[in-house]
Image 1: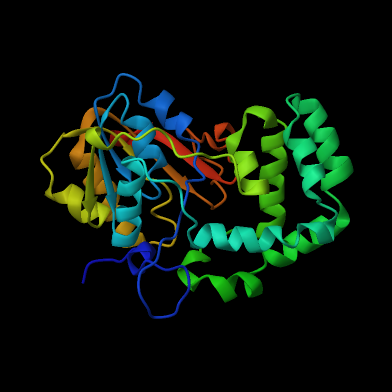
Image 2: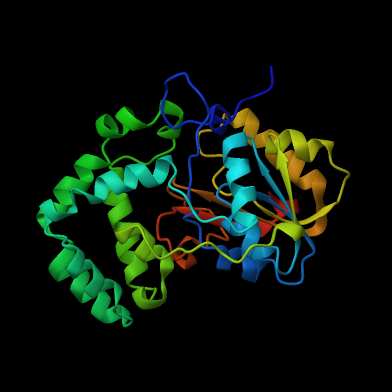
Length: 295
């Protein structure tokens, strides 16, 4: 039996049922891919909500693959100009935002914070107005395993670090200390649920493929892709699937191909090529950028 990937059920929870739209937008800073893939030709990416594929299609031939037919159809609609919709992730985040006033996070305060452009001022504002004891206690409780298990199946939690709330708060603070809020659509999307508009349609330069990524890459000719954007496809995957996918990437990639792989996990100490601090979403522990031949 071939090793499985958590995403194939098309749901975050552990209930049996139809596959769902999981992501209405992507919380991955595609400018990392845009910069890393300069001068590259053909790109393979995980379709997800379509943001990465659409952004890259302006300069590359793109193959966008997804194992969830509902998600793939949505990405294809967006690439043809349809507006963004809410997925399961956005619904969970919207529910969490309804609790923010309990921590003193009024919309007017958040808009004032998001209008800042000086990172020194942002950190001062964060520490004095937002990172309160009520926020820390509530956020850590919300990100605790017992609460997350209500909404997410076990395979989507297995890779998260202990005390995930505290870890995620630290990532957010590092992001606010590095990236200007006023020009950061990911901060606005995270805190207010707005700001990440659908990118201009690029359907003509994107091929959409409904398949498991490893299986499809195994069927491709050797050396047919110059770059790979794999999202966090390996979060929740069996170790055997990780090995299989990386073998397929090495086989399908050209000699100088680049792969970008994200994870919510904390990075190992020896990890080189981690660009998590450069990702303006400030959510990821790992944004690995490296040549495929050293995977």
